[in-house]
Amino acid sequence: MKSLDIYSNKNYISLDIDECINEPNSNCSEDAICNNTIGSYQCICKNGYLGDGIQCEDINECTATPPKCTGEDKRCTNYPGAYRCNCISPRQQLTKDESACINVSASVRGEIQIINLPFIPAYSDTSSSEYFETTQRITSQVWIFQFW
Ligand SMILES: [Ca+2]
Ligand SMILES: [Ca+2]
Image (cartoon, rainbow, N blue to C red):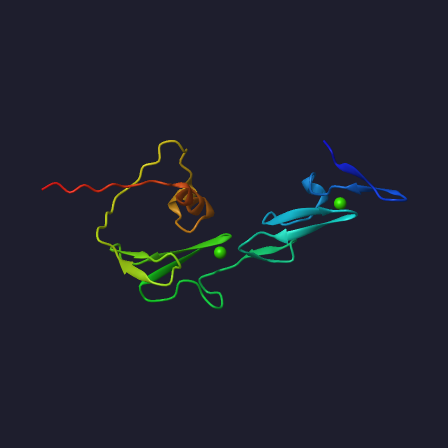
């Protein structure tokens, strides 16, 4: 494993250890990105987290200032490193900028069965990061046909 790089400058050669390759060499939070620098390294909290890189805490976007998705017609759910905004009414959907809930002409409620992922208990917790990531990955298109 490459963990030592040689950087040549005009008059000298300096050695740098890439602390980020061997994780125990850095003390970055698991919610941080390790950034190797010559002679050192930096820990930078991932998007959605705040801190010094050694300790990173999730930003609760739902209670942040200014809070995300305010309004009686919306529901905000905080997730580790993320958040989601929904309209409370199933007959409404959010505008792209998440500023308003607008009526949709048709609405469908149903269940989705995921057949190619093993079930883990975190899927039952709608505020878990596993639930958030899995629902983010679902890309489906529902066609609605009306028969007269
Ligand atoms: Ca380094
Ligand atoms: Ca969050």
